[in-house]
Image (cartoon, rainbow, N blue to C red; front, side, top):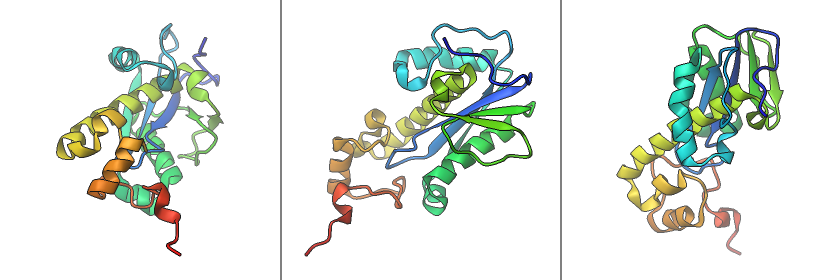
Length: 199
C-alpha cells in the first residue's frame, strides 16, 4: 500500500520523470500535490501499470490534485547539460509551475538539486512507495507518450508510437537504415557499434 505523505508538511509534492533512457524525444517530468484526503487503490508506479490503467488514472489525478504540472526538456538541452541534469531541470521546472508552491518535495530516485530553499528528500523507488510520486510518474509518462505519438506522425519509420524512443531493436535498426532525426539525442550512444574502432 502506497503512503500519502513522507513529511509533516501539508503541501508536499511528489516529482518523477519519464524517458531518461530514450534515444529520442524529451525527458518529461511532472510534479503533483495531493490533498490529505486522497485515496486510490489502483495508483502505483507507472511502470507497474498498463496503458489502460494509466489513461484511466490521469484525469483522476488531475481532477483531485491540489496542483499538478509537467515539463518537457528537449533533445538540444539534454545534449547540452546531460540527461541527469536535464531530468532534474524538468522536475524543478514542474515544481515551480505548481500553485501553491510546495513546502516539501519528495523526489523519485537518489539525485536532486536544491530548489528555492524548499526542503526535499530523494527516495529510491519512491514511485512504488508514495502516492504523489506515483501520480507524478503517471503524468510524466502519459504526457511524454502523447508527445512521442505526435512526432511519430512526422517520422513513422522509427515507430515511436510503439517504442516511445527507447532503444528497442526496431528503433536501432531504423536508425541504421534512415539515420538520425532532429529528435534524436546526439550525445547518446544511439547504436551499440558507435564505440567500436575500425582496426
